[in-house]
Image (cartoon, rainbow, N blue to C red; front, side, top):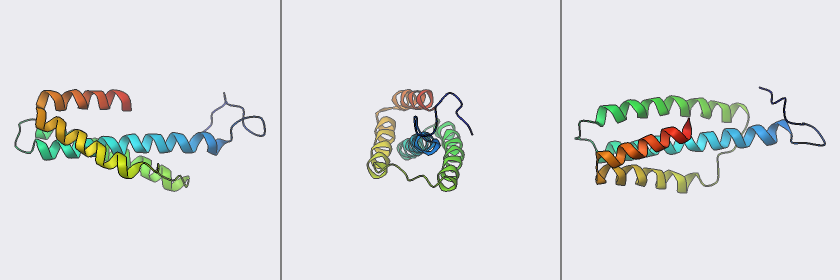
Length: 116
């Protein structure tokens, strides 16, 4: 993977100084999306939209696996905010599901727009 528009070396960022934060941020986003969906699935376990959210959840698991592999391959540490992000994302998903399916879907749309 190359970033030809960035000056590498002594007068610019190194490859790792660019790549590591990119992987870390994307991993945090995928992990957060996974936790939001887990919260929604818990809150909406008896709702008709459960299977739709479950499908999206499984897609996020695939994306997260990709970034887990990239983190291992490039020796990237996760964000130190992971424990907080983990709990906050789950709470957001659960609360949005408890408020109602419209709120849960609005959160889902927002998450997908940010991740894409």
